[in-house]
Amino acid sequence: MREIVWDTETTGFDPESGDRLVEIGAVELFNHMPTGNVYHQYINPERSMPQEAFAVHGLGDEFLSDKPVFKKIAQDFLDFIGDAKVVAHNAKFDMRFINAELKWVGIKPIPMSQSLDTLEIARKKFPGAQNSLDALCRRFGIDNSARLKHGALLDSEILAEVYLELIGGRQPDFALSVVAGSDVSSRAKAASQTTPLIRPKPLKSKLSEEETKAHREFVEKLGPDALWNN
Image (tube, rainbow, N blue to C red; front, side, top):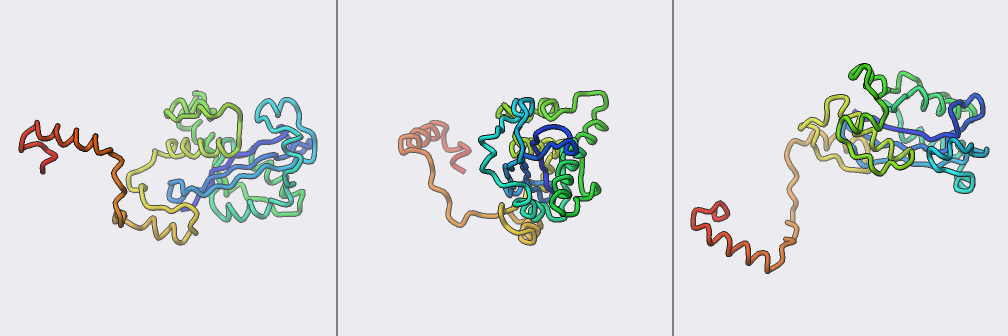
């Protein structure tokens, strides 16, 4: 099962009032495991950045001035998500923006039925509790110390961890060989592998000769029944 966990940054809260997307970040999951395949794009909003929005994500007019407009990147993003379920925190917000942008360039919207909202999941699981992304990180012990400002790619990576915890955590049977950057069919094949992969050539030991000698002398002091002698 392929899923895309994603996040956006914008110039404000309302696309119908002229607010635009300025950043999209997304990470791919396959069978609830990250594949390492990501999408990240800054976007020229073709308008000035309000100070309130700049304070949130730090993306200013000068930085965004040479970035592509949405029309130039729309198909690349759609190709990345394909028909996968798209997972977002407060999904209605992100879906509203992406579909407004798609409408403006004459592309049909992404169906809401294709989206999954982690905020709704969290509210059902923890009614009455704080369910912001930061609050959920604290609840699940997820390190978000790098989140000094909002950033679409970083937030989508953090959200992927939160999402996996919300649905029950990473299960042992999902710890499979999923290769980043491979196509979906090859990932599906890898996900069906139950035999652990064996490195054909063992890695060279990182122990120095002095450390190896000290360990050997230590084991000798333990006598012939020491575990390392078996």
